[in-house]
Image (cartoon, rainbow, N blue to C red; front, side, top):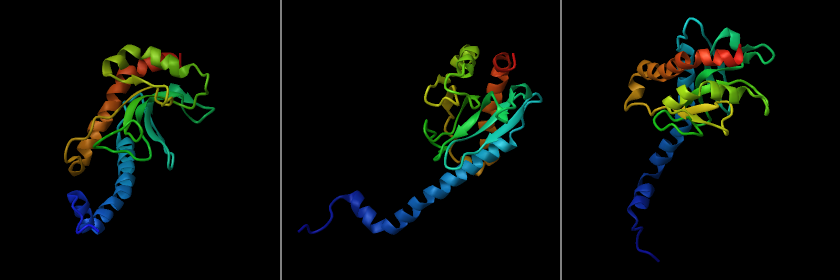
Length: 189
């Protein structure tokens, strides 16, 4: 039989197990709060005069906040056919955004079917602008045909939520300004 556990990290774990488990449990609350903060940022975003905000919440799935023009509204589906915005998955991380959890931002399209040409048309119409911004094309995230993860929040972001929200929403507002006329050509033209 061993006389003791030699591995220092394991010893640390055994000595502090209760506290570690308490801290680990905070992850779920932190994830829920992160989703709430992203939603708050989207709902407080002031759209340009020619734009409106659409919020799509999917409990346990993927949520998004999208800027669109009224001419992009899809009456049949009661949501925009396209827009620009940001989204997040089940486990968003503001400090270390990821492709699966988010948050991410980019060109958004509404509920289009498998063979619908709108996502490809949007990609093509906005190609040079989105290439310049480094937004990548997507086949996996078809509801964001061009996207990227948001830049990681600055250290201490949680001490200045309005500043963090402003940085986050400025990405979307800038993208809207650069792509809105191209999207208009595809969706309303």
